Image (cartoon, rainbow, N blue to C red; front, top):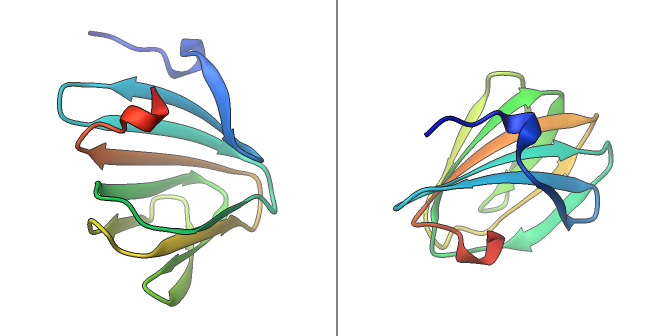
Length: 105
């Protein structure tokens, strides 16, 4: 199946986080457009997650350790790990989740 990201339906999942989702059998890929200053509060989930910064600068906290990530940087988030984030600039991010994020459907 082929996708054009800009043609996928967009929804604001969190304040300042506009997401476009692709759901497959065993994973979800999320493409985010994030407003500068927007935050995801600390949380955890049973999904394994990979985050990549496509554009901008994003502060990400994983298990109490905060780092700033920029274009091309990747973060691996294990299942049940506490994490949060805040956009330092307007950002584009990609998240890959396994298993599928049913709450994002």
